[in-house]
Image (cartoon, rainbow, N blue to C red; front, side, top):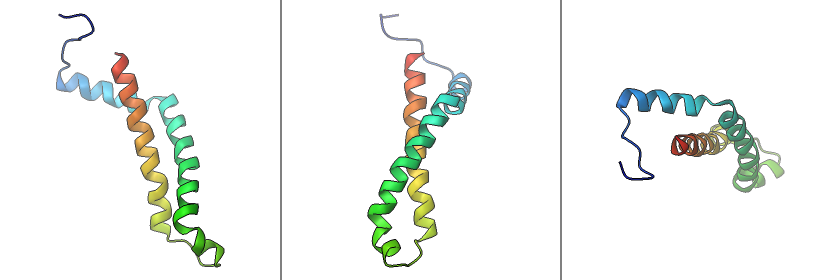
Length: 85
């Protein structure tokens, strides 16, 4: 096999490796931190005028604005771990 290339993983092994990478405590902690920081900033940008006007924010948007950066953080961390294997 050429240097730098690894043998392809079986589907079962890939699924197991992906599960372990996504479940990694470090990946989870970093993704949560990213979700909180980015989510607060995006909510301030997207709904700040509502909040400053004394209106309640759109709860669905508030939740999704935190979930999306969390998922991106988990994906990035997991792919980084899988890329090292």
